[in-house]
Image (cartoon, rainbow, N blue to C red; front, side, top):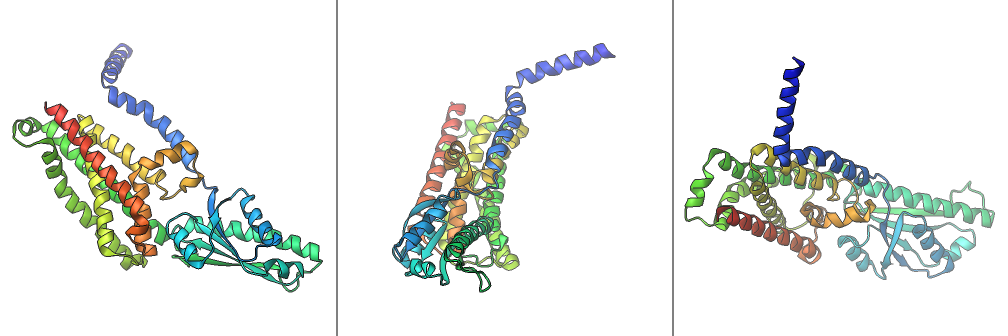
Length: 373
């Protein structure tokens, strides 16, 4: 019995050694999971971009700004002279929070009189906004305690310094308003990539790919024709998610419907073409399914800013996120749905998704042409 088991084991080892792709997945995936989960799963939010509108220009106001920047949580993102600049830096994502210091702030604090500062927070990501709010309250409270000690002012009347928080785009900090755009990207990416990857590989397994090769259809026409039906289905599913989210979770629509349709279409074209690209590298549906999940599920969930802030990741992973299309799609969705911004603000994201779609289409067509040659 033992000898038979050993014989079967030897045969299986030989089979595994011949199937290099499966062997690579078995060895590579655990290590990849460890690295990604170990470094990307970081609940400590740091490097928060902070813009400052200092209307006092005093030593006390500079001390307040230094307290925020030196706390280790905030990075100075620049001065904003006007209220219009505040809207611009938040809409473009140049700053996640803006510290507004009123005139005569330093004089009021020096005399032991109550003073206040305002912190405006981008609420499109409710988890991050809640954390930023907590950081800001803690810093202002610490400075208030020091001022009270210096002025020998007791606290029966309340703290000397107070903070007036304002959360834009999601004042109630509802998690659904930031989760739903991410879920749209997550669901659309996985379904689009897996559907086209399995569709092409299925033809390989059934032997119909040889018939396609002998036909006058070119690789690009084949890719477009193969993805067109799935594009229509995925687009309908994505828009259905948007409508259901509006009905069930109160998701607002503050932007342009044509712009939303265009952003979703760009993302889906890239995802579907990427699925075809995966199918050119896989010989079986099982391998195609594993590759599709590995290259779509993990990056979309972990490296797109959907759950974990990109600014808190190591520099290496931050660089990797630039090739993740969901990173740009989620920013575009939140900008259109929650902020109501247009192409002038989302131009970079739309351009990045367009480049990904063109590159994915070109690579999939090129690989098919080489296989058919």
